[in-house]
Length: 330
Image (cartoon, rainbow, N blue to C red; front, side):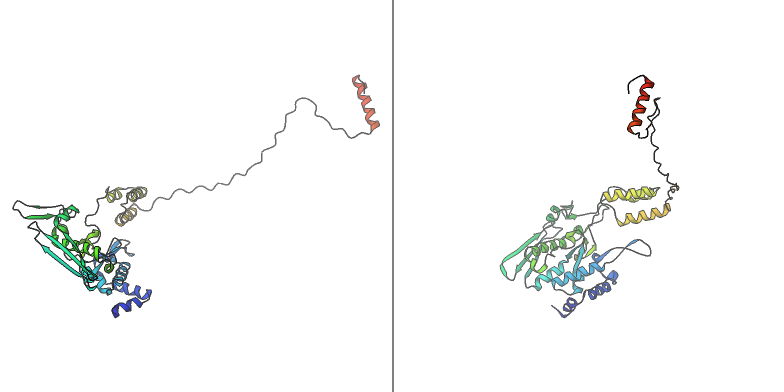
């Protein structure tokens, strides 16, 4: 391990953070695979900038492979959160580890007989070569080429076009990409101890690349067509509720993007502040009143009158008087 790598290994997390933030300021000098969408605090709009987090991931991945941070930045990309390795760095690491790597190309694309074969011979097992071949027909079978057939003059022509008719990498760099695919297959089969799982190139993970395998556009080369014209629906919304309803439907369809969020914010601004709902009037609470007890209505009978307590003699005198009054016995 070189002195430069050792210095980075011994750095504190704060020193590493300062290091990658400084590198991220290089802007256009950094590969597009290390950029990401970020909101500009001044304009509140999303824009592309180098990502310090991705730079850190790449530098740490390079450290795992034993290469200098600058070599890692030139040879490692990040596609959809996954570090990938460029073919040139893959080849260099395998040879640096002492393994033999042979790439043989026969025939031609126009002749219809192109074949690219990569042979990896490990230094610790020279009797067992890892050999993998790629042809344009393999690319057709894998869905990378739309077609590969001779034209009216007998010249074989690969075809891979985007929806707007532009040639894709597999049409432009057929032989080179067959070479990188055969190299990747051989490396994944016999060189995992060197590459630590980084045997995929950016092109294999769907990025648009140039002839050297460098990322031109991160992410799938052919983005999926949205189910609905979400932006048009947001622009046509006449209320804040309609704007939010469109966002909810886009989210449910897994098609909510930063561009749609920005369009929704713009439309909200054009519609102005939502009208405030009328406040509820202040009403004094009505006090609870205990119900009056129900009084039984008189039935015409005289209510019983309680008599004061009488002595025995007074009681008998009263009884005799009552009996004489009503003609009965006491």
